[in-house]
Length: 298
Image 1 (cartoon, rainbow, N blue to C red):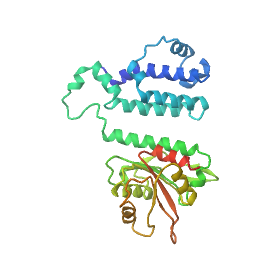
Image 2 (cartoon, rainbow, N blue to C red):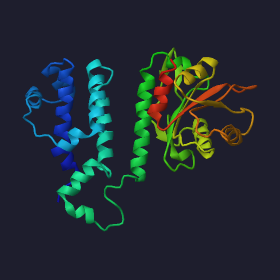
Image 3 (tube, rainbow, N blue to C red):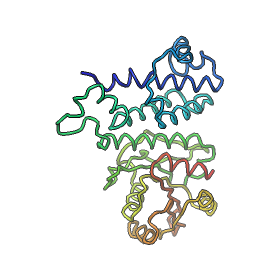
Image 4 (cartoon, rainbow, N blue to C red):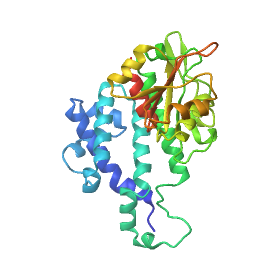
């Protein structure tokens, strides 16, 4: 009997660590600095550098692993990413590769009986509800880190506050939408996130996202910012399409009417009315991408 965690420890982790150590050394960090960042000994870093650790060729060749190594290497070297954040990013990728992906394949090769398992569920089900929820929460966390590290984002937060949300693939209600409990607020010129993302804690931005999906959009994430012409111009410069809706009409009806001819939009906005603050809702396939789009507006 072999657990998939053993595959992670024996095949993924040595390869991933050696790739990251190699990347960091290539960026000019010393063995001591690399060892500190990765939480390993200098002798282990030396082994990685001299090719004394057996590496899995399929892990080495996986573009997602390569991309993550490059991103984490750049972030750790510049101190924009902490070791804890890097660990969280790596954990997300590991969970993805465990679910019907590369690590699941390696696991089944180590235990061929799994491929023929005749239970009620697949042990490596890539579409499980738990996995989908984990992906959504992880994407919101990544997006929040982007916003917290974006100088000037606080200036885009409307008076009612912002929220960054992402829904499950088959979302039907607010409980299927992950977001920030409360709101992201501008506190003395700094964006302040009151707590870790949860499901069912956003009402308004979640309702906008759900109404957008009901109107024919495939977007799974939304982030609201204040409205003005410069925001719309910034979205246009990114090649994104924004469509306005009536703030005084019922929300579902207003968004359905706005999307009737162009359901595949990248942002929705309403320019305000009596007692209604004007707001832009930036849409994307995931929360991290929505945050990156807003970051480019600053």
